[in-house]
Image (spheres, rainbow, N blue to C red):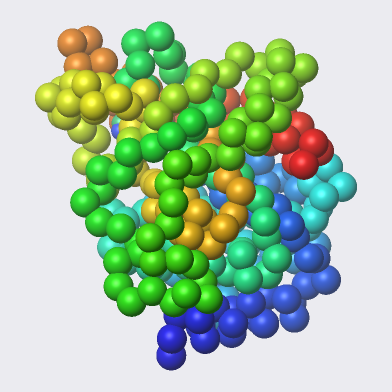
Length: 272
Ligand code: HPA
């Protein structure tokens, strides 16, 4: 079955399971799942019951697709996302983004937990993603291209909508949430990185590092979605002052910042 046929099957399943017709899609990153508690959920679909969907094995991630309303807007929320290090292909990881597009999503809000490379950041900060570097060594668009899903050579001059960044900055100001802005670099993981790697990432222009988001954003751009990316800085990755960090600590820091992220996302959803 072709990718397009699978997407259509999943779309039909999702749309026949709910009356929600979302135009906004939200992806919740590591430790940020609490946000889902604020969505008025009409329909909750276990990833395992959705045809062709992968399911989540990463710590700090559930595995449910929520359809409902947030701030009066119809939304679809991925509670738990997929990572390359889990062994999924990039096509599988990004499949839910294709499905979001197919069920009517136009705006994608995507969050993650990331390590801070910019020395002016601190753990707990929120960073609006202004641009990214794909250092995963793979790309979800490799393979035959279906022109009906998107162009062979998608333009990447503005993967993150400057208009949405402006909206987020305005909300942040109103809500008194300090936000940073910067470049996210994606690596495969699952190990955290060495000091030499962090030094390299900083030299090539990154402000934060993580193991997700970029594949979804590439597919989102391919599909013509408007994208807002938000990183929660969970630990500082300063090569000359590096402290050991555990995934438990990363999840705890992300959870502690979840309230700020929620207020930001709610404000943006209200303004869209
Ligand atoms: N690398 C380092 N620190 C992190 C990461 C990462 O990928 N994600 C969250 N904190």
